Image 1 (cartoon, helix red, strand yellow):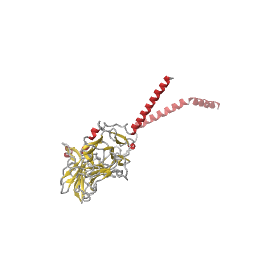
Image 2 (cartoon, helix red, strand yellow):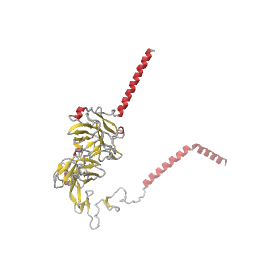
Image 3 (cartoon, helix red, strand yellow):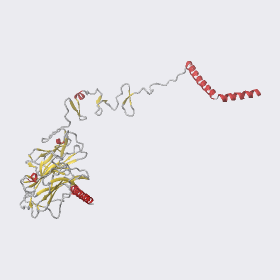
Image 4 (cartoon, helix red, strand yellow):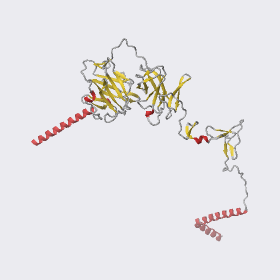
Length: 484
C-alpha cells in the first residue's frame, strides 16, 4: 500500500510538471518566441554611456494588402520611467540604414518637444493609418533592412535589424498568414517576430503622447527650398544589375540648393534626398528600391519640396528599351521634350543617340535598328535602270511608268488578281492541246485478246461454281427431248 502511495505521488508530480511546461510553451507562443530571435541585447550593448528611459518597443515596415501599400507601418517607443513628468525629447532621433548601407535620419525630435504618455507612436505619412499616430515620418521601412536605431546625442540607445544575417532577425514576409511585427521583450531586451494580429500599438487620439515645441510667434513659416529643381534623366531598364538604375535632377536656378528635406515620391513612397546641387549642375539619385525595369503602364515620379508641394512630375512611358535612358532635351512647342537615348549621361548634360553602339565589325541597320555585319550593308548595290528598292522587302522592283506595268520577263505571266508577275506553271497541261488519235490494228487485236481472256475466266468460274445445278438442268433438258 505504501509503494502504491509513493507511485501515485510521483505520477502526480510528473503530471504537474508537464502541465507547467505546457503553460510556459503556450505563453512563449503568445509572445512570439517560436520565431527566430536575434542575440540578446544587453544593457551594455544598447545603452552605452548615456542613461535613457526611452526604448524601441515595436517595429513594423508595413505590408501591401489588396493593392493598398504601407498597411500597418509604424514605430513605437516606450518610456520606462513612471511617466509622472514629461520626458524631454531634444537630442533623440531615429536613424535608419537601408539594405544597401545608406544611413539617414528617419526622424529628429526638435528642441522643446516632450513625451507625456507611456508610449509614443510614429507612422509613415503615406500609410493608410497615418492619422492614427502621434507623429509621422516620410521615409518608408523596407521588409529587408536595418538597423533601426534610437540615438541620443549621437549615442546608440537601442537598435534592431531584420536582414536575416547572423546578428539580425529574419526578414519580414508579405505572405498572407506569415505577416509579423518585431516586438522587444523589455525584461530580457530581446527582439522577436510575433504574429501581426498578436500585437497592436497603443494610441489614444484623445490623449496624445507628444507635445510639440512651444510655438514661436516670431518664427517665419516654412519656406520652399527646392524650387528650381526638375527631373532630367532616368534609367530603369538596366543591363546586368539594378545598381545601374538612377534618377537625375537638374538645378536650373541661379542658386545652390540644399536638398535636405526634399524627396522623390514613387508608388506612394517617399525617398529623402541629401546634399546640395550647384546652379546649372546635375544630381544623381541611386534609388534604394528596384524601379520597374520595363513598365507595362505609365510610372509616375514626383519631386516633393520640404513644404510637401509637388515641384515636378516625370511620367515614364511603357515599353522602355534595354540599356537606354529617358532624358529631357529642352522644350518643344512649350512642353518638355523627352526622348529615349542610348547615350547614358548620369551627372552630365544629356546627349541624344538614336541607335545603339554596335561592336567592332558591325554597323547599324537604320531600317531595323539592329547591328549587322558591315559587309551586309556595303554589298547592297543600286537597282538597275527602271527599278527601285522596295523598303519593305529590300528587293528591286520595277518602276511603273504612265500607269503601264512593265512586262513580265520570259517564263512569267501577270496575275490578273494581284497585278504581280508569277511563274508560268507547265504541270497543268494548259499549254498542250488535246489531240484525239485512232487506235491501230495491233492495239485493237491486243485489246480483243484481253477482253476474251476476261470473259473466259468469268465463264469458267460460273461453270465451276454452279456445276451441280447446270448438270441437273442438262439432264432434265435431254430427258424432255427424248420423250418428244
